[in-house]
Image 1 (cartoon, rainbow, N blue to C red):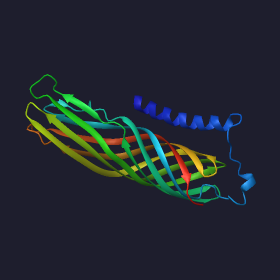
Image 2 (image 1 turned 30 degrees about the horizontal axis):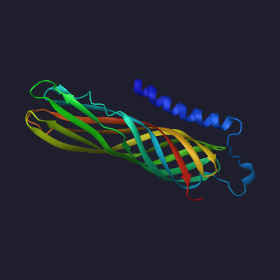
Image 3 (image 1 turned 90 degrees about the vertical axis):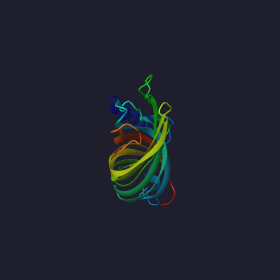
Image 4 (image 1 turned 180 degrees about the vertical axis):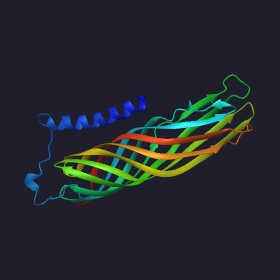
Length: 234
């Protein structure tokens, strides 16, 4: 539940910050009226951008009968996106591809102080998606929903000196991703965005250890992030 509150806070902060900047004295504003003839559909075209935010996911599994759900893969993320919008009046249809990585993974000690003590390291190598966007433009604001296909790779390392044992395993998966957000055009061609995405991904694998039944897996990834986009074409 704490993670849900954090995600909501990230999105609220992004929207509130944009709104406050738009309403404050002397803040830059974007008036469509003077350039309406030249910029009829300002969201139309190719764009590129950077994003940062927070991601969390459920981890499960066992190592020598120890529960691995204590592994913390909740972390800040950074990445970039590339997309194209088709705008007609207030209606917008777009396509976007993005890729992110965790800022920091986690090391988790299991059976500490026992002969079978081991350190399990976990990290997300990448999280990517290709999505369609359906939106509604209101002046220099854009509200949108998004759905597509996501991809991820997790890497797990095991180090059990007392056995001795060292190993590394990768889990790849793909699945549905969906969400939505709000975007604000600060000036023509430059926009700020806050969005939430949920990746329905999940994979599990046996761990290559001497303990029968050892396994590790992850299930679902939630992301709340802010982004800066710059148009490259009309």
